[in-house]
Image 1 (tube, one colour):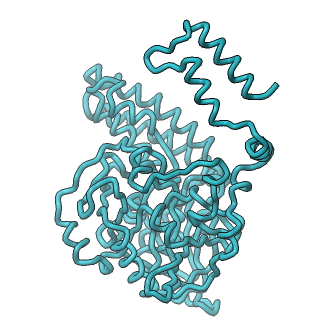
Image 2 (cartoon, one colour):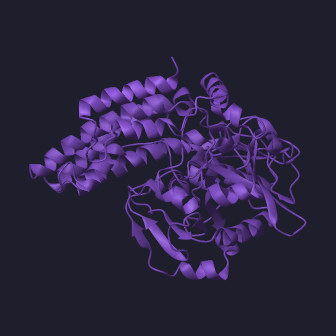
Length: 466
């Protein structure tokens, strides 16, 4: 029996149950008959149905015409790099990206043969600081009902391994950095889900206990002491999973030819000051391209930070053309940048290419997907989902960029672990870029003097990068 007949029988059955009518926006038999006519059930529709029900949609939607012009790895300006990192089954792209930006600078400025910074070291303190941020926020909001908007958000966002550049700057400024061999990766740092789930479970239990203490009018000192005791348990859980972070270590510096220069003992903070020393909290500015909100305004996201005593994430919202101008200035100066985007959209993994023409879903389904960037943001159809390191741009014959290069943290793959973005993709799915203040345009610099517009923590645009 044909699909059309089945739909009509179903419609008649529903109509009988509803008395042939549909009230308050429900579907009547007539409605279902009209709707079902969209599927012609002819040879063309059946061929497409057979293909889709037995194959991967992305494979069927690959635009072969776009593949004929796969961009190559030539770029007008490209920051030198050595070695691709791998975040594995974790949401630490933000941390890998921040450390990759930093290590490129440290290697270039100090003539180092190679260097990878320990993601595990900074991740340990990220999880500890976020645990304190959560518990202290629970104390601060203990006078509100548990189902208040803020407390509900806190309970839904107890702990994550995602983050933004704000976390990178706060954590490195406070705790420094260490080489990867000093605190190597563990199974739990490479695959964070179980550890994070168990620590979050413990934190939720602790939150209820702290709320009870506040309700019982316990002294502020007693509540604080209990919080510190709870964080001791969290520290132990982290140490069992990730190892104990070093307070000092011995490291041999080697030049770009592999020659040993010296061997010294460093604290993590001394190591950072010696080989980098950047003012991460004051020397860099986050830029955003969000056409759903006014440009040339400064925005701050409430509660969006990694440490309780750190800064909320603050950014300048700018037109994409102005962001490109600063990005190109930075790349011309061989300076890589923290970059985040909606990486899941139109990613051809086999080629390592991000291109809005890579997949033709409209032709496959006989429809159009016509929302612009602002509309996708407003409907939650698009938001930043992944951080990478922007390292290259190619300038076309017309003097404008036609493709961009990012260093990814997914290990080896196409383009030696890099992704190539076409310029149209950059326009549509790039969201955030962090630049050194010296590359700011005059118009962007003026915005920094404005009072930030405070946005709520639960704004869907500002979920952490994974």
